[in-house]
Length: 101
Image (cartoon, rainbow, N blue to C red; front, side, top):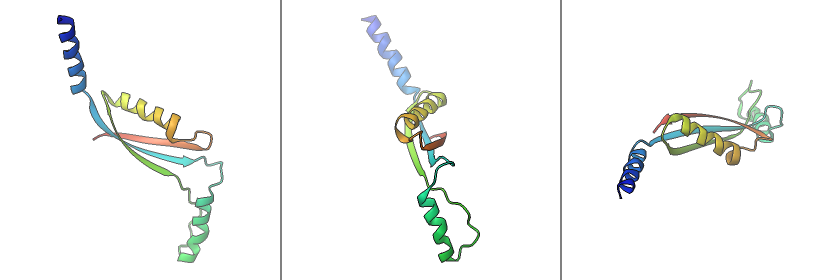
């Protein structure tokens, strides 16, 4: 019985030490790859009298709220999510920043 109570106390303490973070993730096509959307935007800029725009790269921005016990754990979770789900590493790169929510 004492072990069960102690385990519950430890679990409760761990839950209370979890923090909320916000990750801002940018996913972009590799520079070496063509970006047809970006190319179309550049080609149409001249029709809007916006001269001098030479390159546009179009990607995705993801905002993620997550819980973790430390910033290092939050960074690891975001990095894993990017590598395994959010970014196609063959065609895309990603960068992210994390802050407390």
